[in-house]
Structure formats: structure tokens, C-alpha cells
Length: 104
Image (cartoon, rainbow, N blue to C red; front, side, top):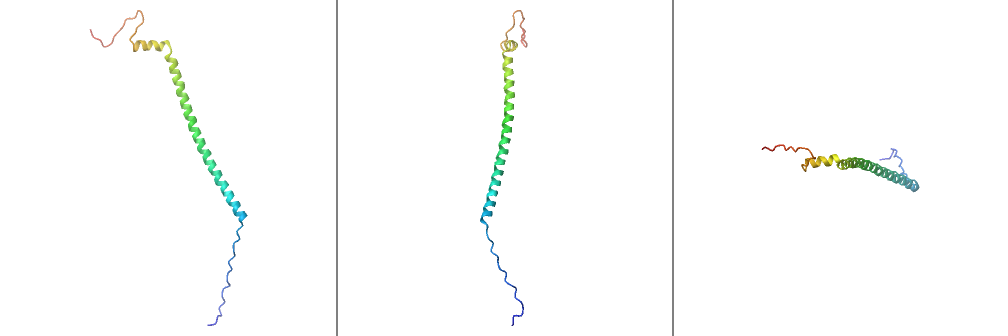
């Protein structure tokens, strides 16, 4: 058999030339981008945490104000008289004691 058919020309495989400088630059840029994203995620988490702490501070400040007003009220003569009447059963001079629920 004669080889009358044309044979396909052989393809030469081009060897890819690695440009190390560019590869190193791409790797460095990717590293910087990933690092920046990580920092941003941590910043956002810290801001959320800070907002929660500030909310808790406002709640505790309101509670402290409420407790301060209660302390101030308990230092008044009105409160002391109320406790003396209700819990100790004391009466003022000239008042007639009334005992509820006591039968003669």
C-alpha cells in the first residue's frame, strides 16, 4: 500500500513559559484580598458585639435609675410611715386602731 494520503502535520506542543514574577504577583494580590476580607468580617462581628454591649449598658442604666428612685422613695417619711402602719401595726397619737377580721 502506497501512502498516497497526506498525513496530518504533527502539532508541536508549545511549551508554556511560566512567568514567575506574574505568578508571584497574582498570589500576593490574592493573599492581600483574602486577608482584607477576613479583617472586614472581624470588624463587622466586633461592631455587632459592640452594639449588643451598648444595648445591655442602656438596659442596666435604666435599671440603676429605677433602683435609685426606689431608694430615694424608701428614704421618705411617707414610706417609713406606710411600713410602720402596714407591717408593724403602729398608729399615730389620737387614732383609733381598727382590726379587720377580728370578732368579739
